[in-house]
Image (tube, rainbow over the protein chains, first blue to last red):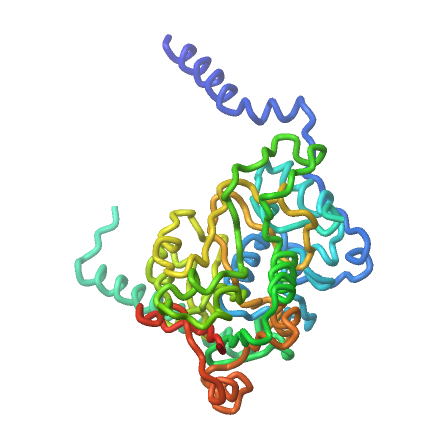
Length: 131
Length: 274
């Protein structure tokens, strides 16, 4: 007698619990924007870390760089691929923005999508913006 | 139902413990066999080194023009704001002009009376009354600002430069209270509207941090002399105080020099030839 009620209740419960999945099935989602490689970065093809590590670890890398540059004065980074980089966000040719020239496409598009707002640019300057 | 004796349980647990203890050792052995392939972080080859950086300012070569040029060169290159200018209303519609008296300075001309209050004699040689003395952070050996900083945002580098990590500064201003030379200034508001022309080679600061001279650490790392040295027409020399053969030590050996507020025991690294 109560078996039917229980089964019906269970069915409703499972449907309700999985509702985010149903919702995703019937709506379309926006895929995360891919950072666009423009200018020098498009031809160089040799970044500090490989693509997947860069995606996951770049904030950690920048933290290590900042401590190294400010505290120890070590400013030269030689990656596992043998390339050397000037450990700087935006000063000089061999810095992050020196190669990835378009900050909006390289940093902002992804950060906006992920709704993170790092405060790097409160102090660091985008060479394109101050011209 | 499985029944385990205490004896067999302890046996299994013991073997498992040995296995878990061995795993990190095995991993280490495995990683070492690949050799050192990690990234390498080093100093630039061309960077200038010193055991303890110091500065000698020859006041006989200082004129008002030179002092002005040094001040301009430093402040321009380091994006030090000038609160006397009116912000561009198009770029910064919300920026207000600032009440008189607020300044941010890294290196600036100062009168002898203020720079050396403890050396003011009753009958001071006349030339000192209007000589422009250039004052800046003294990069003290016993820096009181470093001791005062609760976050280690201000610290002493291996090579004697007292430098700031602006990322870590929480704006408590203990260092400003601790510094007996007034070498530190606080950003009470966003300095960007008050920077006439932003130099691309150095970041600006943000609201809520203290700032000061960094002895051009970013230039020493590239093998270049600080901006003040280049603009001073020979009046300022920067070098290694611990190296008896350095130019700066020769100057100190040949001339009578004074330092600011020596009696406080901070051991300033900036010397003045008078």
